[in-house]
Amino acid sequence: MKRIPVDQAKPGQILAESIARHDGVLLANQGSEVSEGLLRMLVRLNVDTIVIEEEEGRTEEEIRASHGENLSRLDRAFRRVGGQPVLMALKKTLAFLSKEEMEKGIFALRESQEKGADEAQAANGTQPEEGQGEAVSPPPKAGAKASKRQGKDQAKDQVKD
Amino acid sequence: MSPDPNISDRMQAKKEVRRIKNLPTVPGIVAKISRMVENPDTSVADVGRLISQDQVLSAKVLRMANSAFFGMSRKISSISQALIILGFEVVKGLVLTSSVFDMIQKSMAGLWEHSIGCAAASGVIAAHLGRDDAEEVLVAGLLHDLGKVVLALNLPEEMKLVQDKVAEEDLYFYEAENKVLDFDHAEIGQWLAEHWNLPESLAEPMRFHHKPEKAVLKPEWTAIVHIADILVRAKGFGNGGDDMVPDISMAAWDILGLRKVDFLPILEKLEPKLSSLNDLTALN
Image (cartoon, rainbow over all chains, first blue to last red; front, side):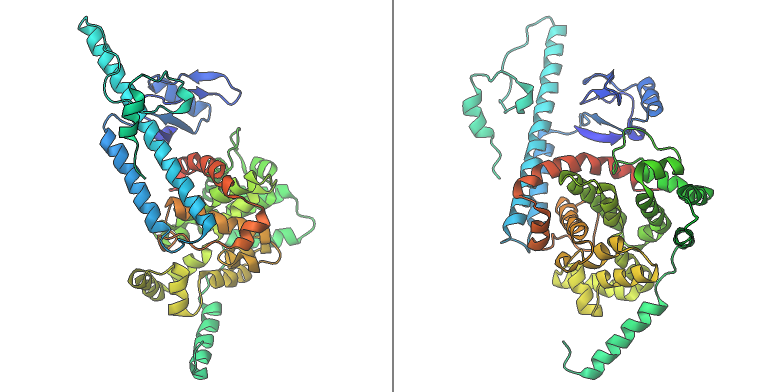
């Protein structure tokens, strides 16, 4: 997911987070599609940015590669301050945030893939299968139930950093 | 330093000449505001009217006032409203920034982004520390690298030499400056601040953001800008002249009372602001 200015938003994009007015009134739900009407309303209400799902184009490999690039960049950026404890803590924090971003991205991607698979099978009149693909740890807020396979597969999936 | 006193004298003379002859003149509106403020009969409304007369400038000021820096819940739609909500010092700072915006954009690719990133980070750090002057520190963060702008625009050949040295010897920008010129953008910033009659609240961060322990009048603001500079470089947002994180001044760290655990909440607050600031990269 990413935050973009409203004037860069396009109809068809999917909201990753719901939008509330300044006084808390809900304007649009997470998961709903951006429309021309919504954009006009947001402009009128002076909403500056929205959070949308990344375009379908991002594969899991690309998301992982992006995190890998972040880690390399961090190594380069901190190359002259290796011994400094406070700066090493900063580097670790940034690496952690990048990893979190990656895991959120992969989780969202798999969610939307599973949703697509479910819909396709429903259209074909067959039942969706449980536990497709490898398990990955969802972010804590999602509260998803852990499947029995997760323990073993999680170990395989852990990103080495 | 140099064993040959004659060379020192020449360098010193060179420095002096550059100080006086090559510094850009203060933007007209900034000088006018300074003069108006010296007159005790001037009201804030008077200054507001003066600024509003320049529509192009006012538009830039309002775009910044409404940007992610300040996170205002209500849109600011006039200079007088900006003066009420953000205060006189902040608006003055935004006027100054708007006046030099073109210069900054022309000087070095990525310097404007680095500056707005540093401003955002300064504001987030100050707010995290519970300070009520976060908006003003933010302005200091916006302008901390004006010395680089002067270097790029007024001494372009020297600028090229400095950039080449950064690449050849893998130096920090200020290290290369000192090797090539015997002075750096922090000193240039000081000269500029004097020439333009800028308040110490802006001058000290410009002068001491690499050596914050030397700040006397605004040590906490300077410390915040120092740390903010480190954060935006660590995040790779914009370009400050080299791609490295500078060493941290533990004096600055300690004077602010920061702890390692503060990095996470600060960075989490900073990230969405930096994403939102993408629409400020063209102030026109």
